[in-house]
Image 1: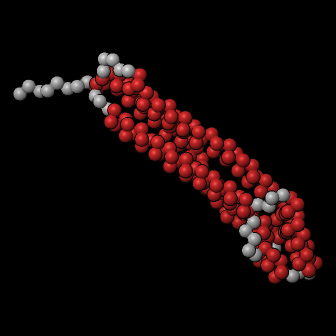
Image 2 (image 1 turned 120 degrees about the vertical axis):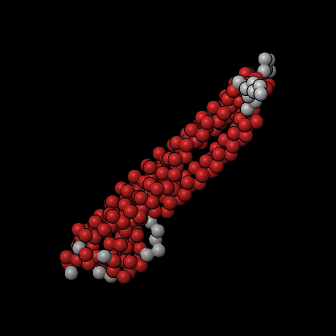
Image 3 (image 1 turned 60 degrees about the vertical axis):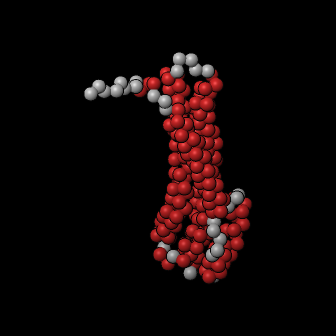
Length: 223
């Protein structure tokens, strides 16, 4: 039996496949962009909820807290901190509730809670944003390859190909590349801004908790 001649791979019509993969790439980029935007908003709101806006706001809170602490009224001091979601307030509450452990152990406990409950949570949320930053250009590059495969497949499958026929595949290649970069570049800038806010929060938390711990130590020694 005579076998049928095989069509060269370069002459196969893959326009349907490349069109489907191009649309799939568009959908993937859309989902990545939405997830990146959601993750950034969540991290931004989380940082805003846990930090004092300025040194003055922190000083006002600490002045209010030091009054009952210096009087030894720890219940009133705990009430000031309770319900306040900001990191200094919650860590101060931990220090007040565990004051009997001593200065060194309370300081270690507070710093451990700050690292575990605040910074680790923010780092985990930022890791999703960094994943989007890395994956968006790669998905865009995948779309570029798909678009060029479609264009070259049409060139190989016909003797004369008009530019209009190639325009769709070339547009897929260019749009997906541009979309991947358009997703990643703003997120890089936003992540840098968020990291600056986190570092400022760390400085404020260090100063605020140091002041609370010093006040607790002085009250404990005086008593």
